[in-house]
Amino acid sequence: MFTRPLFETPDMIVQHDLLDRVADLVNEGTIRTTLSTELGPFNAETMRRAHAMVEEGRMTGKVVVSGF
Image 1 (cartoon, one colour):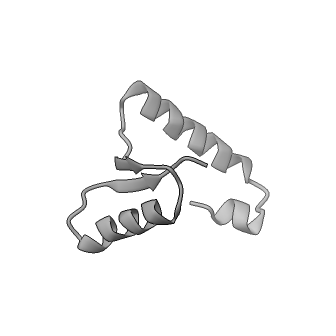
Image 2 (tube, one colour; image 1 turned 135 degrees about the vertical axis):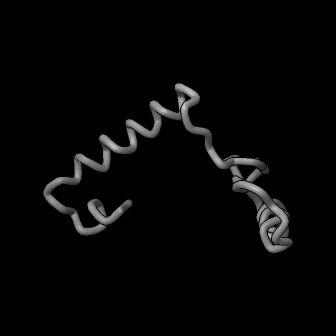
């Protein structure tokens, strides 16, 4: 998905168009994010907790650490 920006191809604007379309589909509810857990604040303890959740191998979806 990120080949165009990585290699700065002449058709890089297509990447922008694709991401805009995906954002529209998410906003419409046509597709859903895989986010299942959001943790914060962003610090070492929260990162350890997020890492442990992923390591357990029983998670469904994605874990996001936010709070910058």
